[in-house]
Length: 315
Length: 314
Image 1 (cartoon, rainbow over the protein chains, first blue to last red):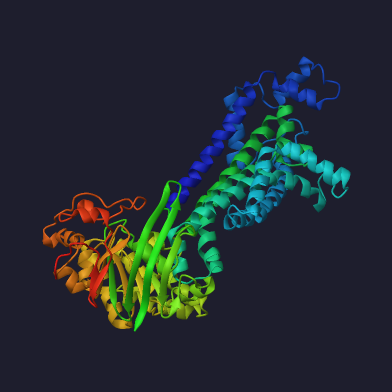
Image 2 (cartoon, chains in turn yellow, purple):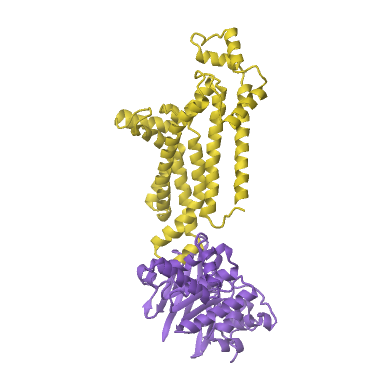
């Protein structure tokens, strides 16, 4: 187990470094000078043309004339040795750490809210459909899941705003701050994963209910409720756990479109605006944080199997 | 006292290609404390009879006939009354012990949950489970109880499912292929455990098996099944010493100790049962009558009967 943990953590760190390098070098491969882009976004009056002196000044201030690999190793050593993600080119030298910690809170809150919807709606309804296989209620719910899988989330987001904010006047259109603000983006984000999780839970549950240990449990004289709670649900949820981990990772990675529609100040919004302004330290750091969260969630899921499924014991 | 009495049991499964007639006009009865062996090759409808008794057949099964257990008619019994019988009065030793144990549950809990669900405290249930493990020879029971099914060998899992079947002193234990897939040693142990249970609880045992060696050792009565029907029934000694049906003879000749003589041909499809005797095609002494007229099971005495136009004399 300890060896396994160390190995996995080692891979986790290597993956994060590789992702950061990829992000860093790819941004430099994009056509156009970084210094000019930064100037356009930061200096009033330079939106259209950037003077050579200003560009030179920005370049020398942020060492943009150094070879790319030196710029990258400088950034990386700052992260490794000082826990410092560098300073933003655009936000007046604010530390990237501050920018990310401001954006991470809203993203995590939104991800948890969506995940709660997925778990609270998707799992019980999936179980319900499995137990009522091919009855009208099952068919109706499955039909609804097909619809929610087929509609793109941005369209659903706009429809939600139209109905709940503009027509019914129940919830705010967009913004961040009050609990009411979170409802629409969380629902818009949760619909698709909820539908997928529901269908997987249903399939997994039906497969489990067909297992011989369920038949034998009936032969033992156990009640249907006991069999459902103590045998079927536990076994059926094992494969679902992986799926939940992947979705939670995606939600934590920030959802650019939904954050944009609802003006949610999360990491997706920060990432998009920084890409636009060529704020390379912010973009690279966002990528690092997103990759790290995704990997950590999946790492936790993998480790949890060790405790949930006795057949899986890591050596 | 007659504990179980089955009369004209027919089980049919409708499928896309036709109806599978898995069990045809099966009748037999069992006394308390008796061991009856249902023997026959794979696909002869042995397990279907066991599952029909404990009512675990899939919902598409069409069942006719009567199954009287202790004076109660099981085929028409309400679901909750049937539920009350399972595990307490009728229990099952399942065919595939590995698949029949919940992989997420500790071995002790596989037994203990039966007691817990009926209101026993968790500690007491665990102790009772450990006692049962000792009964079937799973020692050290405390340690085995804490382990999970995947940590046991096939023979140990078999004994674990057997201990579950005897947890509540059932009157009738249906053991479905208890020695399937076991090595010689594990088979011996299973045979010993089953015969001890028979002595201990005075329970009746319905032994469903194609292991004739086991049947010979354990059974008081034997019913030989072929293509879903009983072709011969009688006391075990009589069946093994003076078999009257040609199929029973062939089965006994095919036992390793009797020279492992194989029987040519295959049993008929349960979807297209022949008009005459089902065994006629493979029988060495069949006549024209055999392929035209279906023989009845002739009960010549209290000592059983045979379904053959030309039985060997006893």
